[in-house]
Image 1 (tube, rainbow, N blue to C red):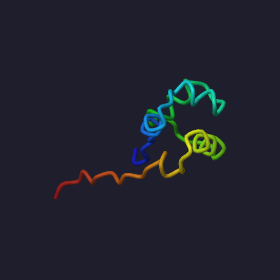
Image 2: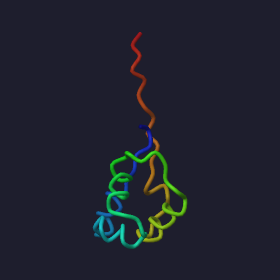
Image 3: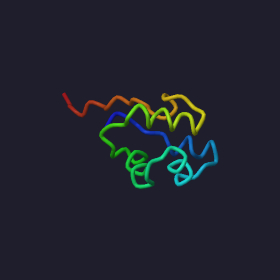
Length: 74
């Protein structure tokens, strides 16, 4: 998937655990894990806002677009 979720990077920069973040933003540790591993199909703006507030960052610090390489050979 071309959308990369960098929650782990921001957690490390802020020296915060996943459990602490989950508690601060009001979601389960399991749902945060799904988001962190890139398995989530969507994220609510309210959740993204809560993550940014808790980690004192911008949405672009959390989400990154990476173009998939074309695997077609000529």
